[in-house]
Amino acid sequence: MLQSLREQLIAMAQRDFQTREALAADQSLFNGYHPQMQAIHEENAGVLERIIEEHGWPSRDIAGDDGAEAAWLIAQHAIGLPDLQRKCLRLLEEAARDGAVPPWQPAMLLDRVCVFEGRLQLYGTSFDWDEHGMMSPRPIADPDSVDQRRAAVGLSPLSEAIALQRRQSTGQPKPASFIERQREFEEWAKSVGWR
Image (cartoon, rainbow, N blue to C red; front, side, top):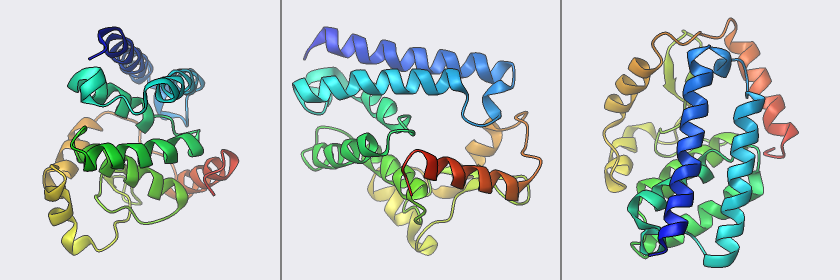
């Protein structure tokens, strides 16, 4: 294991979390993609890209379990960089097949990529406000078998994930208009190259 690489990845993920918490505390996080959050995501993504070029995917064998999870988080949050997220997804899927990362990591990144590309997600891990003002999973392909897919990659049943997301979103400002939120999301997805 490369201890310095592990520490670097963990520090980057911690900075992401700390910034998110600060922006959530003053409610500014919830008004579109906050420029400060975007800057951290893109900076972290650039470092992750250089790490990948030098070492390949930073899986548990070189970054430890917590470093590998930090790398996944950085990839998961690189939402304005479609090519990088797609590349990370391929690498994560390969690492999961080799047992070098847990299978929930590529599953969650796949859902995110599907949603950004305008496709149905497979595991129900991507959430947003619905038309009733509830935090809910974005549309899911074959929803009747989603819990089997989730179990296969080590995720809890969807009902538990929904309950958790709704608890965590308590106190967050709900969008004034579901339709406007969807329109803004579509515009953003086009503007960064997801569509």
